Length: 244
Image (tube, rainbow, N blue to C red; front, side, top):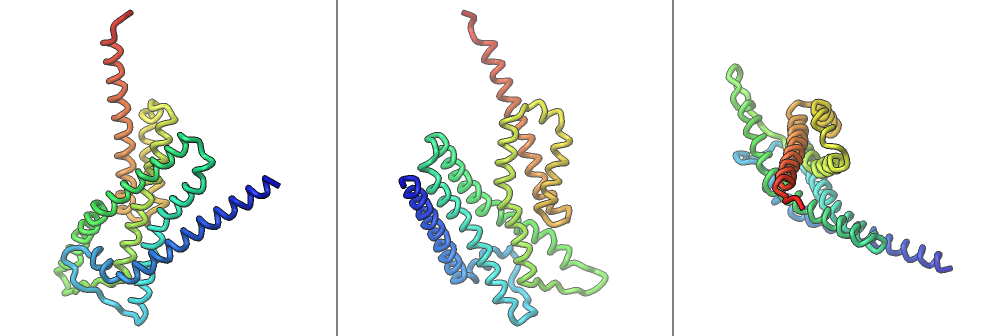
């Protein structure tokens, strides 16, 4: 009977957590839809003053798509917090502490990504591609950006950045539980694997592969450099340690 009561209690607790997550997602969607035009203005690159819409329902559907993406992205944090709160009573103290640290690290990581890296990438890519679109000497062409196409590119960039933290976390765990000499010896294979991962999570173009693959390789090399400096520091400590 006690096991049945515990099962019912945990099912009720799980239902409450799911309800909290759903309510939070709906509130996020309503909030983003209320400020949809301001959000689009925020993600505009410098120098862009207007968009072109060719369909009657294109603007409305684009607004709905933008609000759905933003609400779902932010709801992942709510879902993660609810999962942590649901599992915390059954975790050991060190497990709960590690899980909480991962959540806090993810919040600061994505805050840095979306406040500094994301706007910088938008402006950089816009300047790179709009320059070639506006200066076409043989024929007088006029570049008119469409709202739907622009937000699709923003969605792809958001997908790349949102998957960056899990990729870096998995890479850190693999390097933490394996021998570093293997990572140094098989560096070329790691480079190929990084670009294979980038090919799975990005559109099939070289720029997207470089945006994802290059940071993975840089983080990979940074981990090796930190490990090498740590080993050198340990060696110096052993040399200076007095013999008893």
